Image (tube, rainbow, N blue to C red):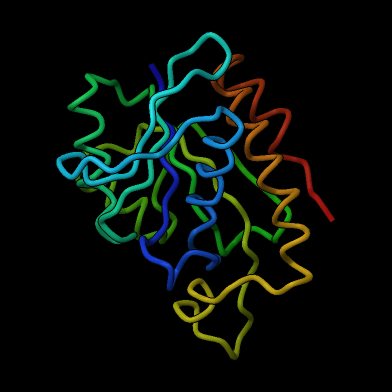
Length: 191
């Protein structure tokens, strides 16, 4: 079984924000699998069990807010008896241009507070993460304000394409492993 966690903040206020691109990806995967995300309070997340290819998968969106994502992920892992190698976390990335994605088997938080929370709670960096580029705010915009802002109408067209790439990336990771997935997706750039 695999666990796919999309990071974001719960609530309508944040629904379309850049920071919620992980939630958007999980929503798209759930839609494609015809899976309905449900809330179970003790799991601290919206989640659904489904299949991608031959693999049983849990799709999840922590409801703990970004900076506390680790507690929800820990609940999902312990309740489903998963190993760190079974986890893929999807998160936004300010250091990648909009249109780029990058998957890695492990690593630091690179300043992302959601991933940092997961690392702190699990006491390990050894879980896969798929970083989805949201672009940089530039010099005159605060990064916190930028990640909580919505995509522009023009950017939304590209975001739909990016979400399709993310879905394909997740499927390849599940079905063919990390190395082939990195070689296929880490150099691509959508325009």
